[in-house]
Amino acid sequence: MTIRNLERVIPSIPASDGAGVKLRRSLGASQLARHDPFLMLDEFFSDNPDDYLAGFPAHPHRGFETVTYMLDGHMQHKDNHGNTGDLGPGDVQWMSAARGIIHSEMPQQSEGRMRGFQLWLNLPGKEMMKPAAYRDIASSEIPLVSFEGVNVRVIAGTLGQTAGPIHGGSTDPQYFDVHLAPNAVFEAELPAAHNAFLYVYEGEGLVGEERKPLAKGAAGLLSDGDSVRFEAGATGARLLVLAGKPLREPVVQYGPFVMNTREEIEQAIDDYQSGALSRDEIGRIKIAQNPR
Image (cartoon, rainbow, N blue to C red; front, side):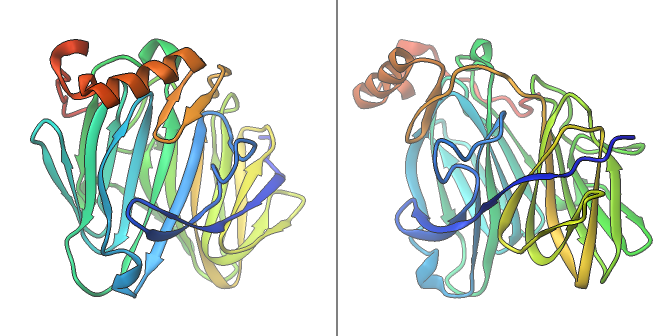
């Protein structure tokens, strides 16, 4: 196996989104901070309700997928087709916005901790105008793989012989939440054709055979290879391991719209402003229960 090494570090920076929710953004902080097919990664974490209570009122998306992973707290999703989904600790929502959806993500608590992540994952141009689809994945549906000093939640893809609830698709995403005891080592195969990165959200550790350090709150883009190695520090570590097949297509983004061309972006804006995005002018958006 060829172990991937740490090639670039993207520190997360303070940001706000929605109606003022405070968060930290690593991938997506600028147009140069992407890692095909990954567009953005936000971490939200606060014990102060003032930081999250305003939530994310109704807003549109087109052209990509959003993956919301809750660690603590409760969030409710509602969309313009009357669908409602509740996310609690450990739950995931995998949504393919595709040709368009208008939804809200609002806290269902007035106090306590709110913590989790939202990942934006690009779609190939041929799938950007397919019907929207989503799947709510309960924490109990996510398998746990354990070995010496390491516990891994397999959200998407395959770890050894264990498959997560999401697998396949154009980008064939791998999404693991890895918990390591002090000085424990996580090693796993990743598809050689995929781009991969790590995001450490607790502790710190050393990446690859070169043992380069990666600190809390930073995304580490990995070199080519077919496996990953992370050694936790003296206090242990928790991190996300993400990999996906690159699309190698043009990316044009304007806020919540991601397409291949400027003309497609202009059409998305027109569809939203005219109301066509949520009406039959572009075809009734049928929400499927499994995006893959």
